[in-house]
Image (cartoon, rainbow, N blue to C red; front, side, top):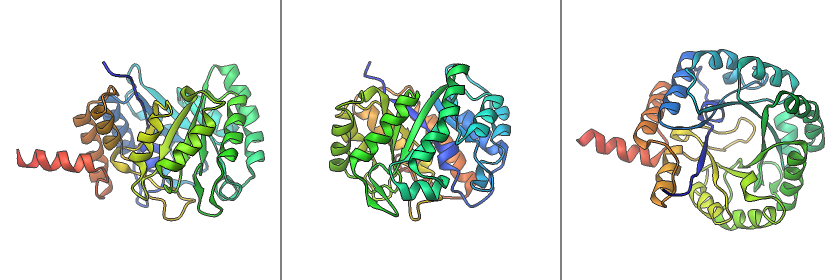
Length: 301
């Protein structure tokens, strides 16, 4: 058996948060069930943020009570503050995630505070999580570039990453929020980070705006990265980053990993069924090239 790549499926949260049409609880819960049945073992199922800020994430507590939990699957939630953490805990989230950015301007637009202020807000949450035995994952947005500031220096990412790890995050997900990264930029970033942060504590979260996501993930493998965030059917965007298109499609990542000899534990045909379901429900095209190729092949058989 090949080495395991852990896929963090963010479609039900990051993927759906930017959709313009309403999505009912039943549809979200069924998507999560299909993902779990395909073999996905880490699913970001919702976000306990203000529904005024992100309307699509309203009712995340109902989502958590509606899907069928499968043994061995981690169901996580994004929590920006103590209120969000309390709601996630009450809803039965297995893990929570906090988020900051390597860009001051983006942080102000996204969560209305500076980087330092956002980190300070997380301190009581991290203390509670430690007392509750709740694992916390950290996100850093704009690790390569920002829609307001332009290119981001890797040193800034390192500083935020170390702060999140020092607080108690077990893993840091590096988000190329506007998808401008290239393999050379990821090499530069990861070369710096892995000088002091073990690769086992890092993940990559690549948007495919410029068609570079798979190449960037491939480059990351060379630095020891073995955790990849992705979104079924390539769903997603960012409400605070104009023009940012979807996350890299989980189907495309899984196909590449299997082709490279890695294991994911995911049945790609069942995964494609999950992506096809949500694409149909949203009345939008499936953004996964692998899914479209295999669905076309199915149609001719």
